[in-house]
Image (cartoon, rainbow, N blue to C red; front, side):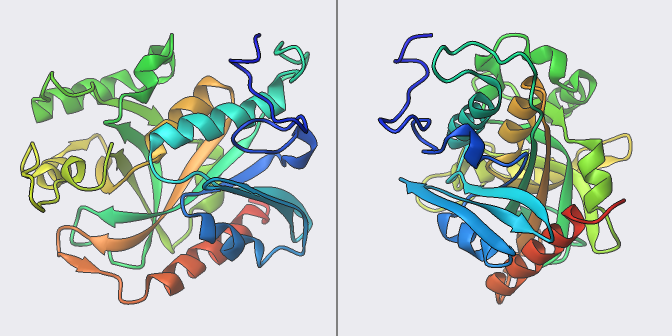
Length: 290
């Protein structure tokens, strides 16, 4: 593998994430906001390593004896493509030769993100776990054999229901980790399909100076159901995380703090408190035995 494909910094760390393999834990918490990394790691028993490059901030430490890494991705599946690809390379490639290591090292990715609910009965400040990621971003179509890892029946049901515009990227659906879903589920959480948009305004149906197309995408998504599933919320990262993680042999799950309810048109009065509650909930659940 050439140096233009697997790019390393002068100190041997991988290009964007700026870390070396031994600085990466097997359990990785993904947050979008760089400032949220410290809001997670403040609860660690100890922090063994910190680094920052652009919007990617990384802290590795331990909580209740469990080693974990918390890393920021920024917004969007384009950044997810960078971060997950590089973290997998740290775990599963010889960085000097680019060749796969003899033994596969599986990782667990847990996204702690903010999101907007699509149904009036999903309360602001509540927690939603993503059973599936429904991606409108097109990321997985740039990788061979992604069809093997996608939920084709659910995809086709959504395509038929929505009469999806062929000028847009074809939606794809990937299921999250059942093991992590069981670990993070409680009476404090609800479960639904999370739709991942390719932007914050038009792709999520927000009107400013440009009219979105379709005009009422959140209404369209809210009306869809498949078996026992409905689309519960909108954000910008989950589908990319689920797709790349599954294709690379890892586990992934998103835990969403609902800071807005699009159906009711309301926003959290104090999202910082809700986000902190989500962080403490996830840390405790991830370090408990099922």
